[in-house]
Image (tube, rainbow over all chains, first blue to last red):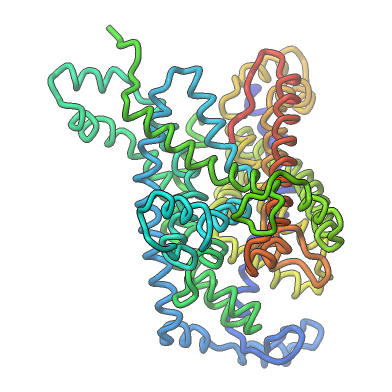
Length: 304
Length: 270
């Protein structure tokens, strides 16, 4: 038996503890979400019914099962409020991901073209803001965007506008916040593929007479598509369910689904509808999630 | 012949603008935390007034202490579990349930936090667990161990496996080979993983809001409820302190990983 295979056996045992943990705290909870999404709101503790009580005997359990219904889902797909929330979430996610690609690509491209030594420095510089708190970064923008904030002071000072512009509680503020917060997630995978690319390929194309934009479109961009895919998924999926950024920066007249879920849960105390909203969100994200899983797996296990 | 520099003016401009975009807002926030004026936007000279205010704010200090404890304990458990998971995935070859295992580990990395938070809360309610320090810690461990697993796994993947095989050919059993050869080599990644888990936990608002109970708010929950009411200079001061804490953690950890990796190997990024 090879050393590799002897090593593999105890390594497999290492899976037990994290496996049990993830099943218990990641997989099993979804069963509860599903169950409660089929329940009704009640003024009780916990605020839903039926409550499964395993000690109450078989008949009580059967009665509880019979009381489950898909009413919450009917409500979610028929009420405009929720349908709009899903549509808005997807629109915001698509728009922001496109913006992120537009902003992130030139930065990643510039990083990949730096001399080797400087690339590591640039990478640290891109990662560090990611380590500072998410909430703090949004708060930093509230400072800048508020009525008498720095941005308006600069615009007024330069006489570009005659009176302060309303930035907060608008979609532009939300998009600025999203692009700002998710930028490292777009830059890093793009940079990883661009840095691995052979510079010879671009040089060959330009030696054969292609103008720079053609070199980019016909050689660089197609070769960077794996990075584009990773960056897009890494941003798109969490943005669809985003709560904090739209809540603090966007107006309150049209909500994203993360916000409606939050509202149903914390303000209306309607746990069943919040759970049903979570299930639908999960279904919407299923395909991108599976794509992302495949990509992540291939990337981490390519050496195998 | 290779060109000496491939950097175009466009490259330099986009890098400079990009970094300015990333850093200026944070810099402005830090500068205004030293502002003497109550109005956040009017400069009234340098002052430590808002830091003083923060240190006299009992509720805020309590929340900060709670966050710190949660971050330290969840990061430690997450590092342990995440490292085990990474070892199993990169050295365990094929085993039953492997696809499900890696699926469960990679999904939380992108899963919207409202879903993770809600599902964990429903579990805690069903288990009748008292909500507070431990529920938030468990929730954060679940999220952050996945990040640790990815960081450590990518390090294990780039490691030369013949090293541990050589140790075993020389008579080490697998556990000993792992402890004396593999573990020191992946130590920088494990440290980086702990740091990442710590800062992610310190940062989290959504999952903590769902899983905490009355009377045990974390710092982000407090900050959030203050921010909703508007900008306050005290918040700038707290944010600056959090940034300083995270910066200190990064510096200490990168020094530690430099010391532990003898051949100057750098810690795995992210």
